[in-house]
Length: 387
Image (cartoon, one colour):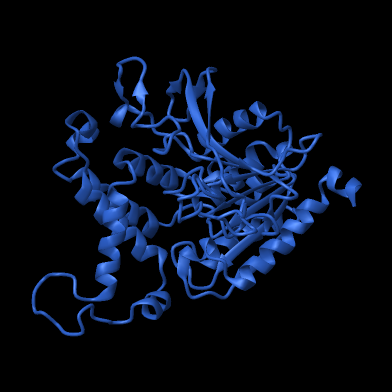
């Protein structure tokens, strides 16, 4: 019987929920006595467990990276263009793990999970988590699968920050680090965008100081506004002009305050969809993790010294019209790695799509990405022996 999925798809996938009963000490000073992480895996782990790749997600991402959850699914995972047989992250060669981060809202323990101490959702009482906390929880995930060293850790945006932190905190546990459309820390402007988004959520009348679960409601308006603001920063001026221009939905101005331009309609649609699919407390947590990220802080604010801890090879990719994490932010990391005498490759992709370009199968991007992943595969002992 023919498969309903494309030939280069990983096909039907099933999430796994993994429980950890060892307490996890967090940077904020609190700890989680136990927690769960939801993951999806693609491909097969080889005999010596040397072909594993970890994919870290961005702010609103999750564990569903590739494939489909049912035959009726019309939309695959969020990075399906990059993960699958013959794709840059080739599941014929790699065993790929994607997870929903601690504090997330798609199955891992987070604000919408039940607090065992109270029998109610954690809500705003869920502890603030940082990128370092995520990396520590991911190290335990690697232990669960018996993976002593990752072939590569890969992430875009906030996911790239996690990959970079892995290289510093667990230098012996990865051979390659791919940091895509990321930065060594947020600029004041980016922190400002995050604060506006948090204010939109927390000032929503239905937020109830984060205890909206008990009232069986959600701060829908706040989430919509936060997502609309986010989308503006993810797109470039060129990309918005190319996609929407000043096109009117009906072809004429109606002289009222309803959405009349295509871009208005698009933003409202994205905000509406997001407001029913994402948890508000999780959004606050994720943006704070972004704000706090600064790996140089523990090394006298010297990023080169932070990079001296690393042992892996690096690939940095940026996009010309990404103004949220502009190419010069990636070059800061590249320069620090060069100063620290670490092996690093860098590609700046000419693309009009802005920050969202890292999610899009732009031919030149996929070509560069795929070429580097072939190097990663070449460093896997089992793959070498099989050639």
